[in-house]
Length: 260
Image (cartoon, rainbow, N blue to C red; front, side):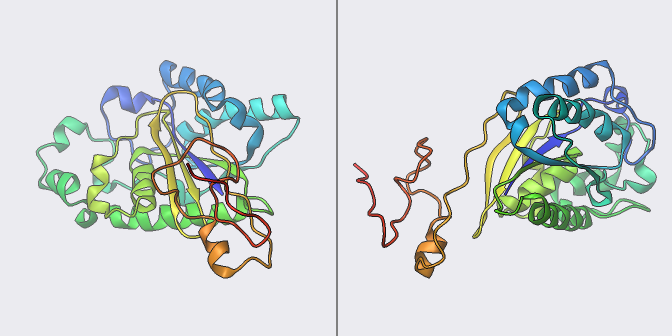
C-alpha cells in the first residue's frame, strides 16, 4: 500500500510568519492556490491510481486537495472518497498558537523543540511525541483500509509539516529526535509504501513530477514461508529500475534470472 503525503500549499499564515496551528479560517494565499492546481500535473499518471484522499480537517488542506479531487473525477469518471481525519490535524500548539514565530525564538521551549523534540510539550497544547503517535496510527490504519482489496492501492494524505515529518521519521525507523533533519515544504510530496515487513520511503519533500514504483508481485499461497517474506525484501545493492519480477526470489515454479 502506498501513501502520497502532501503538505498543504502555502497559507496566509506562512507568509505572515505566524504559527497558525489549528486556528480556523486560515486559507491558502495566491501562491498556495497555484500550488494546489499544479499538484494535479505533478502527480502525473498517478492521478488515475488514487483510490482515496484523506486530509486534515483544517481549511488549508481542504483547499489543497480540492483541485485534485476534481481532476480525478474529470480524468477517470470516478468520485474517490474524501476522508476528513482529525488525527491528521496540525499540532495543537496551545498558547503558542497565533504568536509570531520570531517571538517564539526566545522561549526556552524553542531549543527543546529543535534539539530534543520528543520531550517538547507545548503549553496548554500537545507534545510532539503525542503528535507522532496519533499521526502514525492514523496513517497505518488508513493504509490498511484504503489500500484496496489486494493492498496495491495508492492514496493521498494531506496534512501539515510537523505531522508529515513525524510520519516519515517513523517510516525511516528513526527516533523522533531526528525529525528536525527532515524538510517538508508547502505543497511538497513525500511517498511511503508500507510493505509486509517494513515501510519503504520512496521520496521526501519532492517538488517535481513523481512516479510510484509498482509493489512487488504477490506469491502464490503455496509458496514457502521464507520466499513469501523475501518478496518484500530490499534489493541488495539498491533498486535496479527494472519494473519486473526478474530480481525477486524464485518460487518452486520459477528460477531466478541471472544477476550478471
